[in-house]
Picture 1 (spheres, one colour):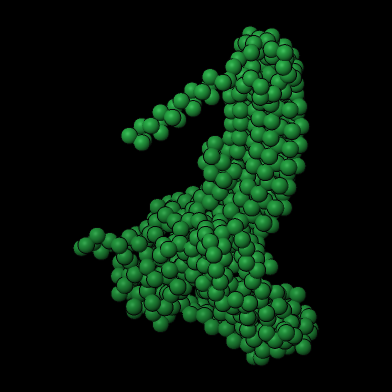
Picture 2 (picture 1 turned 45 degrees about the vertical axis):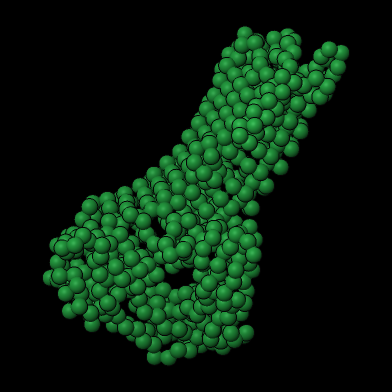
Amino acid sequence: MRKCVLLFAMLLASLHAMAALQIHEKDGLKYEYEPGSGSCSVKECDKQKEGALVLDEVIRIDGEDYTLEGIKASAFGRCEKLERISIPRGVKTIAPHAFYRCVALREVTLPDGLETLGAEAFLECPLERIVLPAGLKTIGGGTFRGCAQLKEVTLPAGLETLGGDVFSDCVELESISIPAGVKRIGSGRGHMGGNVFSGCVKLKEVSLPEGLEVIGEGSFRGCAIERLVIPPNVKIIGRDAFAGCEKLRELTLPEGLVTIGGYAFGGCPELKKVDLPASVVLLGGSEFAKSKIERYIVPPGVEVLSQSAFNDYSELTRLVLNREIKSLPGNFVQNCPKLETLTLPVGLETVKHGFYLTNGVMLKSLFSPAVTPPRIVDWPAGQTNNGEIAPTTKIYVPKGSVDAYKVTWSDWKDQIVGFGLSLTSPKDRIAVGEELVLAATVEPATFGLEWESSDAAVATVDATGKLVGRADGVCMVTARIAGSEVEERVRITVGGGVPVERVELSKESAIVILGEQLQLSARVVPAEASNKELTWFTSGTVGEQYEMNAVAGVNASGLVSPLQIGNATVTARTKEGKEAVCRSCTTSASR
């Protein structure tokens, strides 16, 4: 009974409110107002209205003045002869679909003080330029979608939110500058936040603000961008964010980036090289598919790969999976016809449903550096197939583990070959200008070696392992089996350089509240160490399961930003390989 009474009361209140609103007609326009309120809105326009229209700031109704404050939903929708309109100051809101499909509307003057532009307000209008007024904070989803003549857009400095599809399919738009106050370009799908500039096929120049944190799904899909520098505070690049940018050939990603969504840069055929920052924790899968990338090294913080993680990498020849990955889906590599060398993680424990490395893949070399052979798991009872690896693929495993691999990977026992690598240095300290030849032994002897110095300013190393001291300091010298992640290192001090003994973090564990940040600091010991440069990165879990959304990100100075509730591990590592870990940096919704 109480519910019936309440519903009846609500109905009466609604009918009373509707009854209070009245309509005033003047010059082909219908205004909605409440007597005595002092304000009104345009509710409807005569569909035959043509040419130019200047809306009055004040409407005189029954001897009283009413200030025009809004334009209602669909008020001017499909006014197909309207060419120009000037909206007066005082209007704060333009509701969804207000001018949608006004197919002759080429010019709009918007007032200062406008606060909200509703979804699809100017959908498919032939506007050529638009200046959005100061004070506008929100532009709704699809507001200018399909404005095929739009060439110039000026966004206001105070803008905070760009709705999904807001400028999608504006095929004449060539440049855009996003204001400093925008933290997110899209955050969901479609009108919920994705595809903000999707289909802007001439959009070549894009200026992104320093404070930008999220680039949402499909935001710049199919644009004409050629060079792209992602700002330093961006943590998330969403799925398909730059997919189909066929002219993109230069890409710079910042340290501090946490997530790259699936196919984020897929279909960018001119992209040949990308350096992934160590801070990346989550990869959505095939994020650079159909590019010309030849070498891909998975960042150290990534612990999970998706199904078909590397699908359609037509030019990829070398793939190195980082040592932190414990489990792999069997079909994580597909349609990579030029892939020659694959290095599995040294910490790999299991492969789900077996290896399937023949679907558009013809490997020459598969390196499995794990001492204990990874197990094939999750087959139905009684099924023991290990999968498919081409009979011409050589499978290289640690020479002391050959017999164990031939038992565990019995389907390929005749392809298994033991490898070994050792690296020694006659001494661990040299003078500036001094030369030193490092001794590396590799099995089989036919393997090539790659040499690398962690700091070429301190010491350089050539293709034969000859080291030359360049300046006081400490560096790590790496010998790596060519095309793999199988490597050995030695630490070399040049001149009076002082090596790092350890790294200490300001916190070993912490709770970080969503919406807040945590500043971690690291102390390098000893204080006089020659090279104190640190790299910060994170990894994380949600509950007991790994998720394709990062728990937290960390920038180059150790500032931790929680992204969702869960547990994150934050690591600070020196160039010499010394590190410290905050092992339980738990994010929380409240204190």
